[in-house]
Image (cartoon, rainbow, N blue to C red; front, side, top):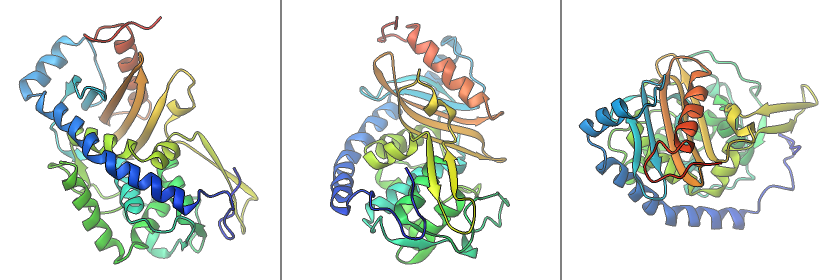
Length: 310
């Protein structure tokens, strides 16, 4: 799809449709949070240690959890209550807060100097002064983890970034994410912290927003812009969404030095909906390897209650 950051695109989803999706997502949030709470209640620290010892599943991520989304049953856990930085996993909460506010998605926002990453010095292909729709900013923040887009979304919120952060933490509290804290809209600040258990709740809630599901699982996105290359292709930071052997309904990656490499997903494996959270993996590809190991583990029916896949 080609979009113009200056003049926008007529193919944006109509605002009435978006409002309907938001209402649907909000009505499903309590149910999603309830499933995640079941997962937390079913997994004590001793259960976590036992599950890790006897699962036969060796992961490189220092914290991980696999939950059957339909039943809320925890299939695997490793250091699930460890509180740690979550990097760009933060952007899932950013998207939910933006959509909950029902701000016009076709409204233009401008990337400013305030949106530049002065904390980590990360690179961005979005130039200061660029105009884009709020919807395009959401797309690039969720799919390509563009920090300037996420920063602009928070800054452009009524009341500015301080009010946006308050809304993020209020949303987290409403989902029962009692060990989570947000301080910015990008995840660049290492004080954005959570646990694997809390992130199951966030993934369940975000999955209830059709637009977030769609944007986080788009493989590539072409953007036309002025003042630079005629066409720029952005790609999803999770290579698994482009892998036809995976059926992924939601995806988000994250990385800063303090957080390591992170990945959260909703995926159907062996005909069962699963939530996977992987935190603090030591290498860029190790989180992908961990996800592949989890899929194989489930498909080989090493998990009670799952059938082997032919």
